[in-house]
Image 1 (tube, one colour):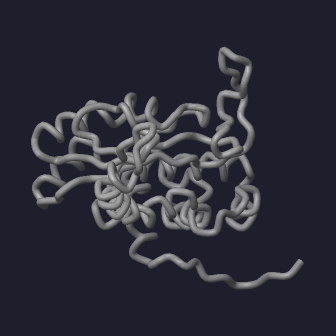
Image 2 (tube, rainbow, N blue to C red):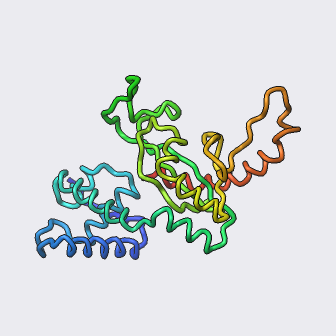
Image 3 (cartoon, helix red, strand yellow):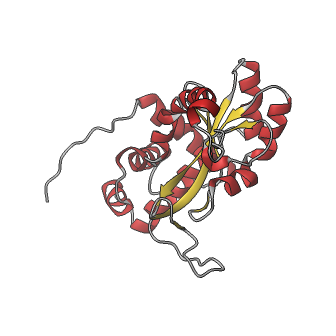
Length: 237
């Protein structure tokens, strides 16, 4: 057995922030002092290592000196505490209007996972995405015009189309925002979603894209391209 030192590539103030949230959570649920195997700071390190390094929970638990079951419990607790800090969609859209954003960008992505149980009515795996050829969950997200992530929805099974997931989690609030002057852009997967959500125009049969939609599509594509950086971090954890 060889012991070695390691450095977590996360700013210390981020660890301390999560540590304070965990400490407040323990006080709220009245956890007796000294009853936990790890203090809030070491639990925060375990959680952030999982986000940053994509490490197996068994390895993280072993390094922290706790059992695998305790490692999973501490990890899920930390994720829940962080998720509670996320603003709601209406709050995000209100802030976008106050900051004078010209629009927001709606898109969906698949967060890959291990194979999950569940079958659709047609017999296919509920959590398998035929589009991505992988198991996972569909999440919808909004980004700013420059690509900064703003909001992420709850997860739907990977077989759920983007437009269906958007109707569940995003569209009611987006329609209200559109009425207040804040439109949203989306890709072809959202065609037919409704007034105010701007999507590429389908080319009519027999007509040239150059003469019908080239200007519209080029402008739309340029704006959509900016949201690419927002999608990247979502696939990390």
